[in-house]
Length: 315
Image (tube, helix red, strand yellow):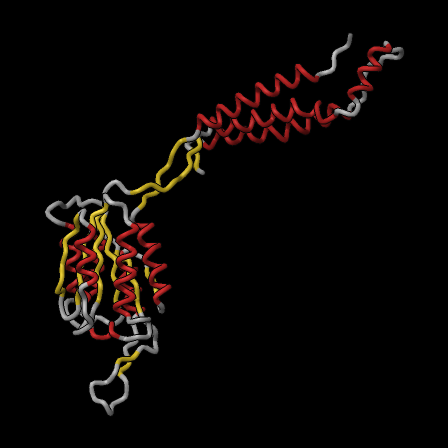
């Protein structure tokens, strides 16, 4: 919760002062005493002796009213998540040869496809989604559009082969998100790769361009350090294909995105769900001054009603 006029919260300091003044007043010796009270007065006092909580209700309601009205004057706001009105997202997925490794079951590429489909299905319908599949170069491209099935088709039609031209794929994704309008809608790129960029343009330069255009690149490094591929030589040792999380983290940091490391299909699915929820929603604020004002008035009415109902009266 935040406040537009927090200075009014200083009024809350009056509450402990009021409580202290009430306690001091009760402990003060009475100046006058009734020596010979009427029998009816004694009966009234005896009847109310066991109901001390009733006498405390009116001041308690009054203090609650004071607190609620102080909050109302401070103009409180609460934050909530809402679906984005307009946004464009590019899914950039590596399908180089190392994505055939089985350290992430059933294979790295199959796990990536399933997680990406889950990501797309969790996005609001008004989010434009595009996709790029790449290895030696971007070889399957879909510009952002409202038809999410087109991006899913790109994702699901990949096969593992080739090198890793991450920079070329990111550069193309930026061009598609910029479009012809320099004031593009809120945009983001989700990059999944399992290896070092070993072809194409320098990825760090592209990441800096993305930061300049305010298009963050969220990166996911997929695979375990022990990932291997079968050697084309039947007598050769398996080929090690560890991921390159350091590079993926650098891309995220330079562009203003977030970095994730996935070493299993379950981790990858969870990461993509988080990304979909974050990129598909926006945090907004709503003023709740009226609610506190109504609550304060309600407590004032309760204080008046209980004071009238249960206050002691001499006959």
